[in-house]
Amino acid sequence: MIARADRASRLRLALKSLLAEHQRQLDEMLPLRQLVKGSVYELKTRCGKPTCHCASDPGPLHSSTVLSWSEHGKTRLRTLPPGERARCQQLTENYRRFRQARAALVKLQRRMLATIDRLERSLRLPPPKPAARRRKS
Image (cartoon, rainbow, N blue to C red; front, side, top):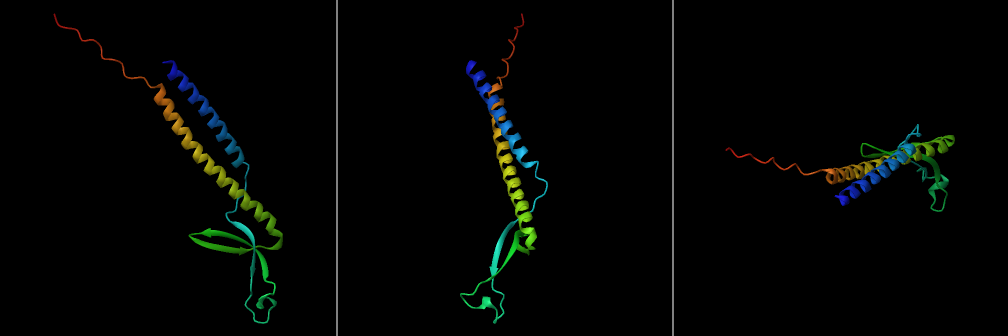
């Protein structure tokens, strides 16, 4: 009986710890106000004009900052104006942080449910024994 109570006590403490971690993940996620799915990076390409400086092998390539994201299984690219790079990088980082916090919450939920199930098993008592039957005299 003491081992059962001790196990239940440890499981309650584990649940409280998981709940605190759950709150930390929510605190990480909730302040994020704007998100953009994708990645911002520098794209270097050749323009295709035969007389352009990029047409020769050692020639410098044209560069542009792009936002890349996946939509319906296809990769999409959007060229960003020079002043938008920092803002879009922050918004895509917000998206990554949001998704990481979400994934952590899903894992925590599973662990919490498993711990709750173990707590239930440790607290559950067997059904009472049947009452003694009286003999007819």
